[in-house]
Amino acid sequence: MSALGDEILKRGFEGFQSKALERHVQELADREEIKELTARYAHRISRGQSVADMFTDDAAFIIRVPGKPVQEVRGREQIDKFYGAIVSDPKPTLPTIHNHVIAISADEATELCWLEVRTMDGNVLSSAGSGCYEDRLRRENGRWKFVVREITMTGQM
Image 1 (tube, rainbow, N blue to C red):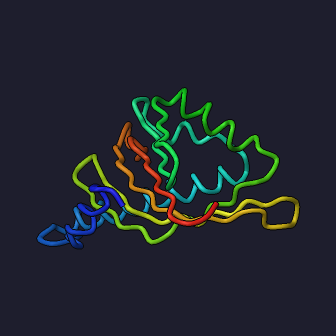
Image 2: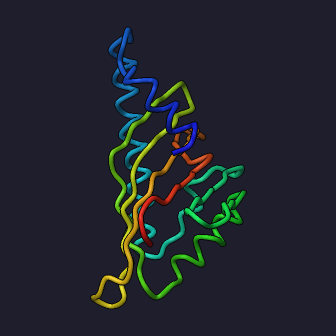
Image 3: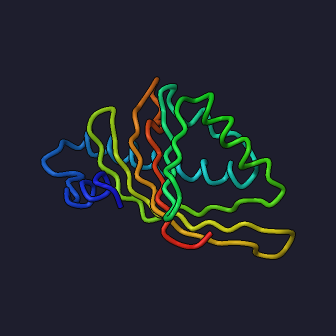
């Protein structure tokens, strides 16, 4: 886990301390929208659909796999091309994202969540893996989007 993940976990849950009811409701809505963003991301990947519009124009996607060089994709156009190659594979990728830890500050947020991913070859499981996403998000035009989505794979793939 990187420094961002450590930072997120050290903060503790500050969620609703000393906040008015209106702020509580807004934070609950923000948390749900961020969780929904990650859920829709997983559903789109499994259906071979683009996820580029879930990222800001200046976004980065960073992949860390033990024993391999870090891979970094920058900008929505490059992210779209990168994911296009993933979802065009005839073996569907089936991600499950869970265990969200979210910190929100106005129009910016950080999120730590876990990934379990399976790849199918017909009806047979061909590979499985796990990892941890460390995300930075920003609200743009009233919607949450990924600014940095960094995955560190921790299990086999």
